[in-house]
Length: 329
Ligand code: BTN
Image (cartoon, rainbow, N blue to C red; front, side, top):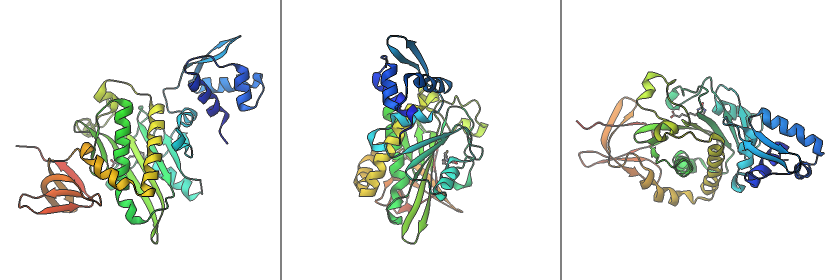
């Protein structure tokens, strides 16, 4: 059942700045007009504000700038209607929290978000710096009906979709740095950590974690991050509505996930990749354990492997690893 706060917010969003009468709201959520007042007070405590005029009702005048569960849920499109969104004040890691919720039998799909993470995790055992600074820490959980081989394109496909969504909502130009980063002008704005649990020849569940630098000014970042990372705000000079962005990304992920299940993602990824590939034509080196492979990046193959053309004319297909762009000397 849809939460009453979500219904109320939806009504105000649909009214688009106009008044909504108390009796309309009362009917909508099935309570008396007097009880509507207490719902409005609860919303005010969350950072919403309203004009109240006796003969007209209420008009929405302010929305919370911090993550807000009801607002995210209210804006979810039809495609993402089956998603439940949960916002936490603090958690160790949203990926770990999503895994715990899956283990406890919580229905999927869902997204869990947190205002800060105390043990945010990155790829290759790294730490994801996650203070409360207007950035996004989110994990999307699924119990997919797909085989492990279908998982090979999962992160790239989701990465491209998240990238496209950010570009259209925020009017920026981010690209995907194989295999799991989003970059703007060579600096990292987001990282993706996909964690799946397999069972015989079936994927049991999968958690897609996204750390996206949205409104941070970068001042609180560790020195080593300042030269290699950026935020949407730093790169564009604008402050973004994080709730709108989360709803849009969730909607986009819901559609991308359906395409992954019906198999239409393969062709779409092949078609879209050249537009969003931040490495193509660049001199790169790939670190794989102790060995280093150098050459020119030349897109991806059908399995999502990075194609590296070596100087001696041979090709190397990288399934995983850490890629760095070599500086010209
Ligand atoms: C990387 O670039 O190494 C991936 C970083 C992924 C970070 C996100 S933040 C939300 C989710 N929870 C985590 O602990 N990690 C992911």
